Length: 427
Image (cartoon, rainbow, N blue to C red; front, side):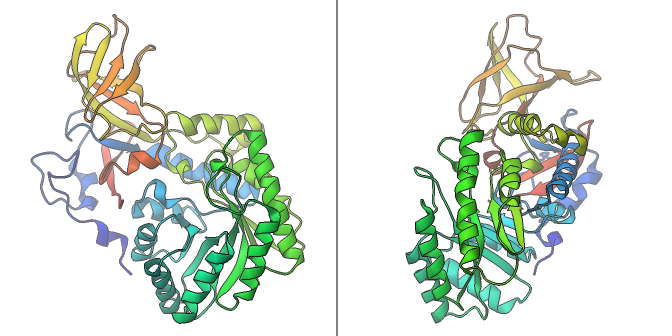
């Protein structure tokens, strides 16, 4: 297995954000360069991660899991950064969650032994890779999903031809009508579960899973209804002794309703040991809109969680220059679709800074990003806006999963925007 240090290939001026005069710098040496974002020591736009927010978010989630008596396997697809994966492992996460074969390979390449694939394991390349890893590494603990008898047959047949040396752990997936994958009825789910029992010893049914955030109507009431649908599947499977030995995993994986997941699954009557697994991935960075509001709603639902300490906060910012102010009420920023996630909400202007000043300002109200081009953001501003050409604006984004994937390297900064390190992503 490669170690984390093996991924730290030298950075060159071809990496976005790097100073033009710096070449072949090992990532481990970035922290010692004395760079500062506001002093223009790096090329704008960079995507930065606030170190204090990352640490705060990790601490809060650890306390939440302890208080709720759940474990977490965060979605690695959010960041695809083995360095952040390792930080999460060090903070006590149970495993990493992935969605694709490539993401699984990244986890395995950098030594992660416990991985959950929250997708059906389909295709010769993927099944053969997993079988080989299970056969060659006794410490590798792997889980994937099934939601059809045909899927069970594909896995069992592939493993009969290419044995893994031990059973493949599977979770039975339930889904909602109009949603993504997953069995739509309890009866359908039980038919799949019984097929898995027949497929022993190639497969071992280890639990029940769903993705509540993909519900077609993601309100609190509909999420609770969906979770109430999943629980009887698990309870019936337990009564029919369809689960393999060991604790029964009950898992759901969104980043907005994990408190409801904990409540519903912890109340399940399995008649045997169970373990609730949440898979929130966006908690590590949060954002300036969607998931920040989700955390606010969570704390409103569960006021007692305020006792866990400072709540998760946004760690992601993209800094860009004011490139033009062609009209009194229009500002053009030098960052666009190539730099900023926009699939859920447009970016939000958070801070601004003028060279030579001694502080960062909060962006006043009525400064609104109204559109993005490839490399430009259009912002509507009031006529008396203080922004002028050459100023820097710190932008918050809405969707972490499509923010990280735009950057090979992201700088980690302290409260003064001194560069304290850098992370590499593998998308």
